[in-house]
Image (cartoon, rainbow, N blue to C red):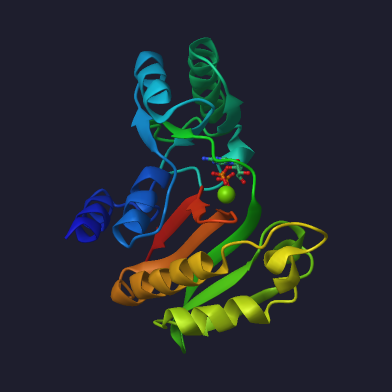
Length: 231
Ligand code: ADP
Ligand code: MG
């Protein structure tokens, strides 16, 4: 239905990278929570969206040619008023054009800036032997340096996802370390198993999925960045 339409449209354009708004729509269709947001095509549209999703906002470049938006100077966070939105819009476009003069620029994604929480990562690869395989870990140094991640072959239940979450070394951080309140481990398990269903259902077209970061709270979570790469 909806997911097929989004993927179909991208394929028809010869794209292998879904844009962030597209990827997030796919996630939302599978019940994963995403920040309120919309793509703007000009600064005034960006202002309208920022007011609608409520300040503070984050603004990001939307281009099928830019995979890592921060590297392109394509992400601005903590934007607090209309004037900052207009300025950020221009800067993001300029930075992207400088980064890759050939990049097709579709617009700027304006989204509500989610509060601080514990950063986690959910991802998937399509293994030649095992098919779609889902990864979970804590964000930042935990993944990059400590490689503290866990894998399961998709699809799997929420209970299986709960076991995944419990087997990472950093589980203590989610349970509440050093006086911090415990994070919503049930919500993580729900999200991880839903993502496993997505990559299983679309195993013939999806190559890779990357939700980085997923911010987890005492209650609930939010997928603040989503990337889907097609085969
Ligand atoms: P990149 O393509 O560079 O990975 P991201 O979308 O992950 O871009 O944005 C970079 C960083 O900005 C994120 O790691 C996160 O810390 C922050 N960020 C992005 N979107 C939001 C948001 N909606 N709310 C809060 N923080 C955000
Ligand atoms: Mg990211």
